[in-house]
Image (cartoon, rainbow, N blue to C red):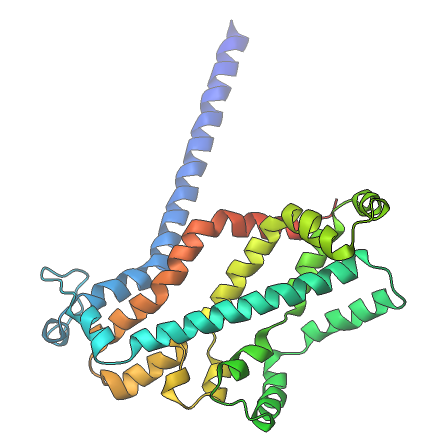
Length: 291
């Protein structure tokens, strides 16, 4: 009887410790969530405040009793936000589509094809990841300028149509597919291109979806290269357009209108990530796991 009582007391202590640990963990996660999400809340809150109400606040308020959507109307009527969004959409879709073809063919060649010096070439290829992107910006700028591609979509797209990291990620995923499938397909007379499109791509679709989403986010947030290669507002992307909005559109004082433009620019990426967040995590973890 005493042993049963001791065991029951031990269980109660274990449950109490587990409950206390869970409370601490969830409290810290809640605090971290508030810290991360607060800038987004402040951005949205500012975007629905009128210009007069915002400037009359000597002490910033964490709510508003008279929200307005006029700032969003001004974001599309005062400046060319619609054009910036369209330019960014064209740049993102074209760059992501071309890059997907390039990295898929390269990853398949490194994963399944046999040719002399493959390991050495792949090692040298990976070594490019140690070179900061800033070091090749000048070379790319000179090349694109000499080709007379400044202020063109082609000049924006070309330097971004490949990625060593994405090739490595996809190559590791392709390598997980058993070689017996490849040999069986070759015995049946299947070409490498058909095997790639009918077998490899469907099997590795989660990783490819992850790469597409990450590339879309990268293109949408691209700033340095578009800023260098375009000085014509007709080719501005949303990231570059924010500066133009600040300087030539709403002015430095109209912060609510600027925040409305930023909300419109940020919303597609937030929605995209929320929809595909599970696929992103699954694809990354699968691509980095052998066996």
